[in-house]
Image (cartoon, rainbow, N blue to C red; front, top):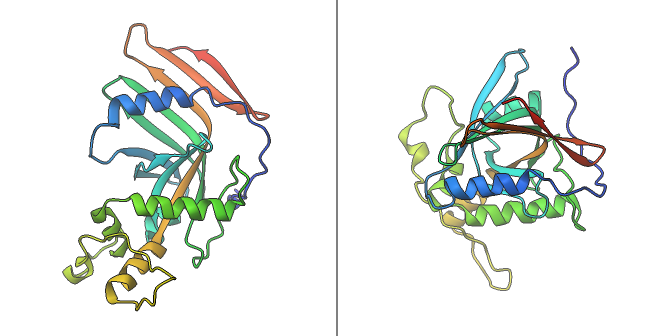
Length: 243
């Protein structure tokens, strides 16, 4: 079996609005908008060995500029997740909405938006926007980094997730990291805290998921309803399916 090729930045044509996006956004509002707890989504793809991988990804945000994209945080040194994404960027996501009794199965492809100094073979995707892909996603990456909680930001100074044996306690010394940026108009001297911040920020990537198919299951009433949304020739097609 041929190994999957690296994703490329697709050419954008005029797209019809994604009919599933308002439904998903409404579900998210009902279930998660008013909680401070992190939201996790199950992800699965195929490893290089042929086995199925399973990860829980922390949801970061929707991309308002283009509703086909979901954003997740990714550490450049997360060898487990990074390795599975590189082995096959095509993946499925499973998102349960317990309060509203809904379920979404998403099919699509991952892209990585990393710091300019990082080298990956996964260019960020183009969006319906006048900016170049690299410029757009770097602005988005900085925006999301700035919006992270201080404790979450600190985790990007830690060793690679899930690796054993566990690193010494000193590797987890940073427990909180405030957003910091040097003002080029001032004669700033880089201090140790700024160095730590910049290293952590360079480790922070956006794991970008481009949706190409959605299965929506609503079991809030009986009989339940199942709808499939597929993207074909830049048009979304919706079809009712057996529940």
